[in-house]
Length: 170
Length: 261
Image 1 (spheres, rainbow over the protein chains, first blue to last red):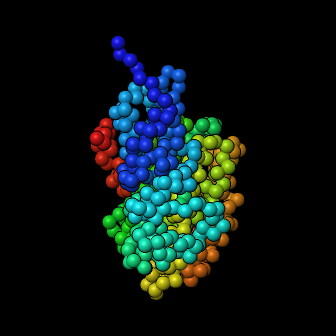
Image 2: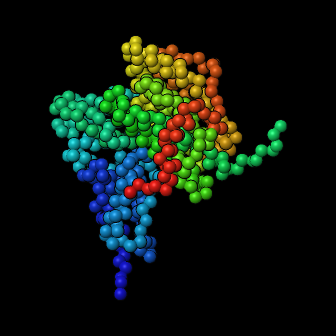
Image 3: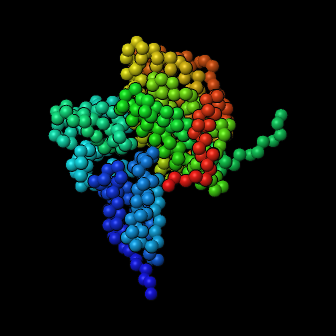
């Protein structure tokens, strides 16, 4: 007789931790703050809610697909994955561990976001210093607010003469 | 006198409102994407491509919501690929050819500045799903505005060549700015329902930001009191939109049921 295996929310969270961001493979979608909510109802139906980082992020469709594949692979029979736009993703949702991993990977992690509304028009290079993820020097400069993906900007370290990327704070 | 016009319902007004917002972003995003591989330098190539992605992302979300409001079983692709130019309600400003880099920057600055003030107010809309989008898009709009504003300053206050070229761009774009603040019965409905904004409320703020930036960039503010284009919210466009749509929609219309695998 076939048995239907039911999963706890905790187990589902563990499965989700096995899904990594296709653009930043050292981070999983839980520590990125992309996987926002897991609900298991009494019939064992699982609902996973994910929130896009940037509206135009091309990785989002890939992530949705990867979550679907992962849950199938892990034997979750009845589930749905929903994109949730009601909450606005912020880099503050990223865990501290994730930020350490980012730095080790060579991407300067985002700082805490601030209420910058009054002076957001000021040049970023005048208002913010991003330390180099390689040599920790503060002698860095902004090259461009936009980088290889929507979530990153480009910097250059004048100390170790390395270009590097910074995960933008939003 | 025409015979009695059909009364606009709230649902129709909201649908139109969402489509106007979405059309602006799709058309400008598509236009900017023409820079991909042609930017004046690698960083700017990436920047404009990123801005395009954001704008098309905003349009996608708005079209998806429009489809929900319309409730006729359409999806976002229907609005992007299966409507003709007269059905598009984007600003003419957004459809103009990309011009040189300065032109693209000048246009982006005018548009992003408008979007910024508009979205700052749309945050208060009485609809959670809508404001969820608005809050997200606003963060990105700020990046676009900061980026284009910095370039206006740099080009305006740069060489004689860059100064003259971006001045010409603003001169050329000026007659497309009045439409940003166009309002009709659709807006009236939305303001009444607490879903839309009254753009006349922030017109002075927008003008001040534009004038201050141009002045700081050593540019001359063109005359606001000149001939202004109109009609885009009713589907009246320049000749350029049709050409763009032909290219953008061709593949999808030739193979309407094709799917990405």
